[in-house]
Amino acid sequence: MSKILILCEKNSVAKDMARVLKCDFENDINGLKYYENDTFAVSFFRGHLVGLCEPDEYFSHLKNAPENLTKSGKLKWSAVPLPILPQEYKFTANFGCEKHLKSVSKLMNSAEFDSLICATDTGREGELIFRYVYDFANCKKPFKRLWISSLTDESIENGM
Image 1 (cartoon, rainbow, N blue to C red):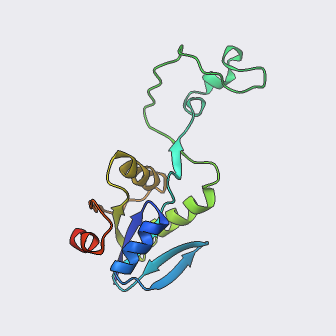
Image 2: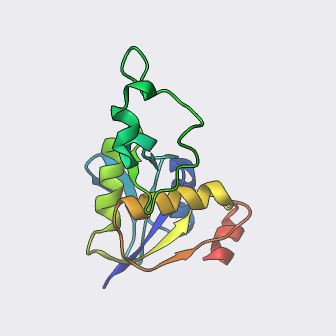
């Protein structure tokens, strides 16, 4: 039987969610802890794991043009090439998040799970965190959104 993977923004929220859903078994994938039972597994993102690539990753001419570089060789900001509107957005792991991101991506794409639940904070930022990781991981699984306004046991139970 396939399980549903619930992804929270923070470890503390994942622990609360796991406790309420009685996900008592603690498991690990490359150092990333997650909690599970026969129906659900609960894990977390640890905030912003993924960001958009820098402009020179989209348009190499920005990086290679001497007038766009500082003396140390870094890209300097200028309003000249703005707006930068790529055809398709590219994502990169945020500094220091590579290992955690790789583990979360592996978990999201695991055959053990047939669908996901986005349980990040309600609001634009929480949704963005989930969507960036989902896209970065090239995940194709269907997902639902858990929309709760508090983390009380009753609120979690009602939301689920």
